[in-house]
Image (tube, rainbow, N blue to C red; front, side, top):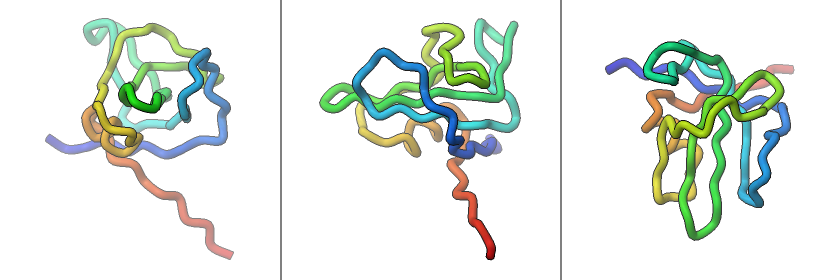
Length: 95
């Protein structure tokens, strides 16, 4: 299986949880609702002593559906994204 790419975005996560949440832009798009819909944004949220979850979201960081695309008992956005089929890429800024 070839992994897609996930890039952290500065979009604030619209989440009601107190966990550490971030929005990632992904390519290829992530399918949800049994493949009927897709999105190029994922919200990844880690809740201390619980787990890390991946949800489809829109370009404003709002969760589209509570359908879990992946979750892990570890506090790791990288691990959760891998389980969803994406490798976290680090953007490098060159001066």
